[in-house]
Length: 231
Image 1 (cartoon, helix red, strand yellow):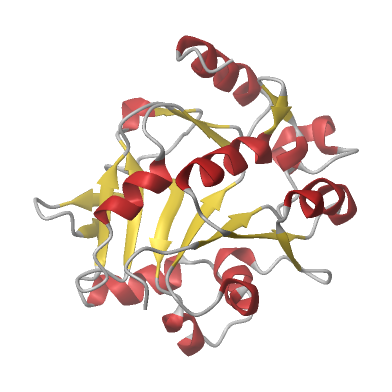
Image 2: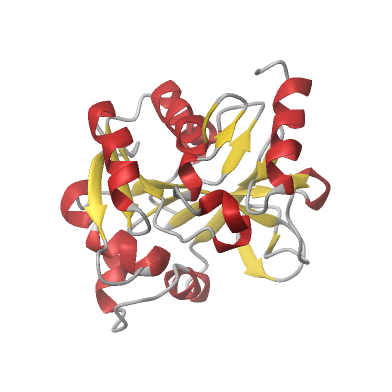
């Protein structure tokens, strides 16, 4: 097992229904923010972190994404019949990702400040951790609504509770996926297994972040990027 993961799964299969008419002719990862598609913001982070193997799962309007991603060297994990959610999607993509721990990254957020993937790699300790999540202080979670997801102790171990917000970036071991019987399931099921063994950890992002899950998120994200000088 590598100490530093070298593969990343981009979650890009969703319908983007909260975007309304904006996703009538394109999948949400292809909506432009700051002059480039959302998914290219994710790819910029991945390239800067030096990760070699990049996989994206596709379901909604897959031809549009495939035409954009394949020339960029992204391997495609198609979910033609139904969306498998994060857990099922990651399990299906293991044939492309390999058996070592992997990064996962949502395709509907923009980041400023330190590269979250680089920071995760620097903090990753596979001897202690089964997953390491990048978290946000509530005041830094632009575009997010809700009470938060996790509490974090002084050693970085996580427990469930309103507090820090999961950002959509992590490093995770995938072998525990084999024990889950469902075909369609969230990675929350795997996190729950890790929580019972005190093997779920988190660190807090140092910089800006914006969820682009609703139309108003585009303007929020562009404002964040402009304030950081990234556009």
